[in-house]
Amino acid sequence: MRILAIESSCDETAIALLKTDGRSLFLEKNQVYSQINIHRKFGGVVPEVAARKHLETIIPLLDSSLGRSKLDKIDFLAVTSGPGLITSLLLGITVAQTLAYTSQLPLYPINHLEGHIYSNWLSNKELVKNEKKYWPALILVVSGGHTELILMKGHGDYQRLGQTLDDAAGESFDKIAKFLSLGYPGGSIISQWAKKGNSAAYNFPRPMIDSHDYNFSFSGLKTAVLYALEKKKNINQQDIADIAASFQQAVVEVLIFKTFQAIQQHKVKAIMLAGGVAANQLLKEKFQQKSDSLNLLFFYPRQRFSGDNAAMIAAAAYYHHQQNRKPLQGIKILSLQPQVNWQLIENRI
Image (cartoon, rainbow, N blue to C red; front, side):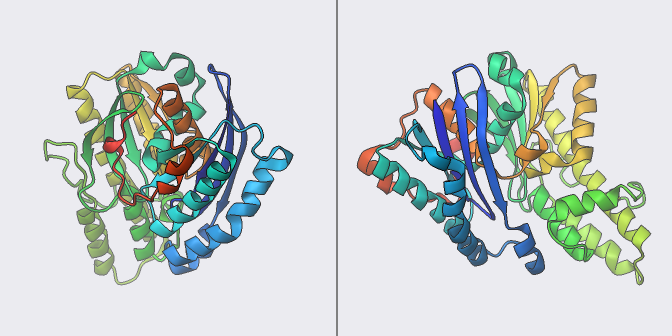
């Protein structure tokens, strides 16, 4: 079985070809065109610019991914249908609709966050072989636009335990980097500066750590960093490193605390990270240490699958197919619309 997947929910144009024999996942192609250098000068993603770049790159990327085989040996297609930027989503969906309808191939609309969850299956063969051993699993989805705690009881069986009430964790990294005039994207830049800093230099708040629920909030932390900067008349490089380290430490502590607080009330067998912030080294290290202390298995995606990619969309589509979820076929393919605010808990296989 071969699956062609398209991802274009934000500022990455991605195409993947995934092959499976029912026991293993084989990634034949995984191409990603990143627009980071384009949006860096704006300090963030500009939707109109992102959409135009998707338009320029998606067909050449598709041609290079398919090669001579074209669609002859493809069993079905998958496309990210939300959440995301509407203009970016539209580009990917339109291309997927055209390919699926003209080639009479089934099409699976995939939730972008669900794709991030399945990046763990691409990264860990043990999950593919013995996944039922790890249900239920607690998943922290943490990215530029989302911070959610998800209880996953099986394929397509999701329960959201908590979410951010304002800024997402990744978004807060971007904003702090902007405050410090470090550039974009903030996640990797803050992490690099934090390595040179003292994480105890600033006692930033740990928002909602005593809220007795699993929700998050990062706007207060962002404001505290801004106040700290305003008090400093002259900021040197060590100050920047200390602020970056102290901020990162506060975010990681909140994410760890909330996740393991949820574990106390839900008997889970595994913990997973998903989303772009899953690439953060400190976050992975702290999760690993805490998981080991509780004798829990901890899974996280490899670096290449942490950010937006189409391979994770193909993997999610494969499990939709395995669970007999009906794809769009025939004229119904043309009815697919972007779901900008598509909630993962609305996903039902």
